Image (spheres, helix red, strand yellow):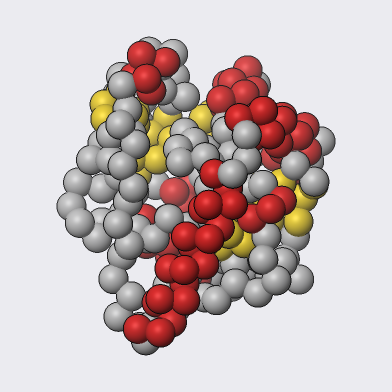
Length: 224
């Protein structure tokens, strides 16, 4: 997790939506309206409710063999009322597993890198004023294909494993390798969310990458 002094200096700015040329204007508007509604639902949770949900999510993960056996785990620093991950990150770093955090691409439309987070990792603010680790010899970046798990934030999800993000498309572009693989499912994609973010059916786009599981304060949900 980024140091407190770096986190405190962050002015949260929202990511802009990525181009949706494959969707009609009506479909884009429907997705945007759903995203606004679910973000508001997430923001309506109190700090205590968010932290309580995060503790329950961590407890579910600790009891899950898939999580306990992972050696390289990517997480995220929560922004915009996302499920908090400070305790989760601390737990990962207390084990033998390696913790990685995402770094935005330098060019528009690029793919994220994942950099290992360690006590001596250096940090910077990205274009959205979010702290991210700086890749160097001590804290190297890794190809996401070599991660065991990626714990993703989300705005909405459904029982089929479909995920709606903030709209910038960074995770979908970075993880599109998973869309073309039939047998090798690495890294496993695990969404972290509040139970209130679940919808019956989430409208999808061609570029969406589904998740392998979602963990909320209520338990672990596997797609069906």
